[in-house]
Length: 257
Picture (cartoon, rainbow, N blue to C red):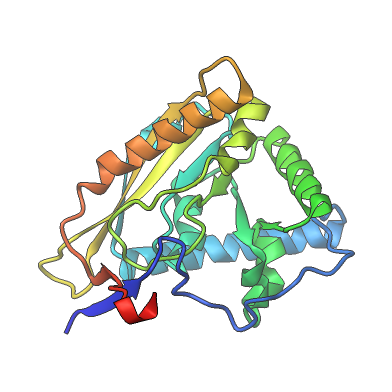
């Protein structure tokens, strides 16, 4: 039987960590510059890419199309993707961007995952914190990584919907980063096609861009870039032809009103 998941809104969360309400310590180091941290980060990231390559190839049956669009780019760009794999989304953009090293904006809830949460800083995670200080630190960390020619990955849908084949609505907020830094952005759209061999579908990843923000004001440019990325994702999502997990909107009884 095909798994069916019911949702009330597009912000419903189907994946929760062991400590969903995890809070970062006040002395959290957003950028670790000491030699040991740099060594450990390089080692863990390298091992993760090797493991991720095997995982995505054998378990997700991943194929990438449009990698040529990233060629010639220094690395100081943003990648926006649809959020459809609780584990795979850690590795998919890293494999797409090779040999460049990525840094990914993530929810702090991920830091509550046993073991994995401890190594996230070394994998290049940039946590979102609901505070003015945290937002300033996130901005500083992103600006520093961009200046070092590292791609920044953002999942604007925020919540993981495993194997979802549509594109959920998302806000303008995350598109302010490339606008303020005057950097290009790419759309990374994950699609799923039925396999004649495997039970799980074939994952096809499309890379489109670069897209540049246009407009008179920051708000105009942010909206413009948002629309360009969303439209590219919507177009590519039509290549999906198989729902491994089916998502249905929950019917609300009149008695619940």
